Length: 149
Image (cartoon, rainbow, N blue to C red; front, side):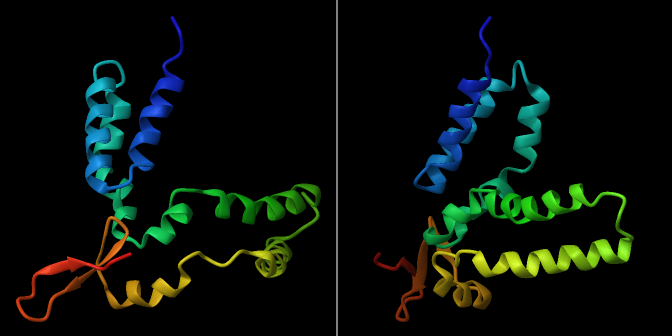
């Protein structure tokens, strides 16, 4: 019997690569319906964290690429891991912490700037985004509208 992993991976990609939250919700429901009979624990794990997994749709679309990946975390600590493995046993807790700090200080000089960094003040101020687009309330009747792209 062939592995279900490639099929499940494609189904998961349909969730997090959907253009809208509504499309992601439909793909999520389809995934849960398809995989619950055989993989109940995995489906339950995803279901309980549904809101958190789809939360990036409430952020600016420019940020989605960054929110959908773990690469910034992995690449940041790759340098630290590379150095600490080679000096294993040679460091005290204090010197290891100092070395990690210095490595991260040096690494941050080559970090790319967040796409859509100009949107960060809006997020801090609590501006609402729907499917990556800023929601602006009309002053006359206070009905929300989405900003034109």
